[in-house]
Length: 110
Image 1 (tube, rainbow, N blue to C red):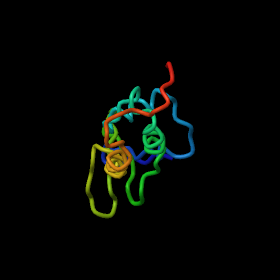
Image 2 (cartoon, one colour):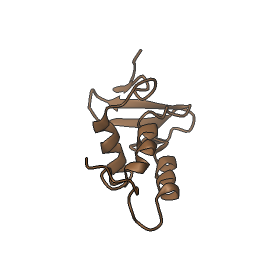
Image 3 (cartoon, helix red, strand yellow):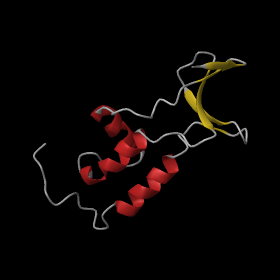
């Protein structure tokens, strides 16, 4: 169910219980700074991030029927354009990225 508050529509959390398309995973990977072609071993992080549920009390909202989704914390009144878990996934990328800058050793001819 969607709720309207002064021109703001609260959306159902769109990220839970779904299987993201490869396109979505690639886009989110690029957003996180992953090179999907050379760092395919990091794509699991993007796949997990695309499906990450919003932590409570965050809700996804749009304003005045716009397409731009922002995230609102109903406890603190804070709002963000970025999905709140994004920072967590960015740091996972840093942690798991191979130090030598090489992609995965088994190169597939994709």
